[in-house]
Image (cartoon, rainbow, N blue to C red):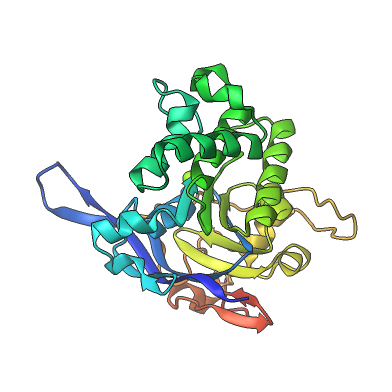
Length: 320
Ligand code: SF4
Ligand code: MG
């Protein structure tokens, strides 16, 4: 396997001002020095509570939100340095599926027009070929040719997400960033969409960066899993290791809250006390020290760096 995406020291800080014109008071460190690699053909799941910076990470990679610092290497180029034109072209190979398919589909356009749009933007195929590709992709995602003339409101939530996926795939991308793609759906529909995404991955050799707050969903779809807390990646491991032997105290607490499908993975419930601190004013040292049940003195002052404890299993915690 080779790396398709390499994120190095990615930061996204949002300035905080008192009023629109007043000077910057401080920053919300939504993504604070995050690094990871996504291998070609794999699914890397990124999990964490809302506000941990996982969506912002996805958006910063795609430059839908301009990163403050860092590098994003994709197909031999650092996306951060690309001019707007070159970045637009790159988006053909790098697509995103959003959480709320309804909000992301133009209600005044037919599904056929919605799906054709990315092909037009990228100047791909003739008008006749574009129409053909639209009909083809509809069938691939489990809809019908007739659906091309329907409007988004005529579909159920699950069908709308199939359209969202079709729109992302129509340019034949290599990497798809999926940001909570099933979180707005009923549980029974969730597994249909996840299975569809798995099938499409196999069929088209796709690579996924799959963002979710839901540990069970991430477990279902991922090959490797990264855990984020307050803008930082705190643990990264192959799925089996992560779920069988979570190392970071935060990961352990998260995992202890969900029932495991494997009865041998018995864990005691760990209840975290205290609220998640504000990313505008994150704790010094380890950002988790204010809630960590096993913190030691150095946690307050020294920021832990990622260490590899066994092959492919990385953790940022002073206990290791
Ligand atoms: Fe807890 Fe310290 Fe590890 Fe942070 S570094 S998770 S505070 S033990
Ligand atoms: Mg989010």
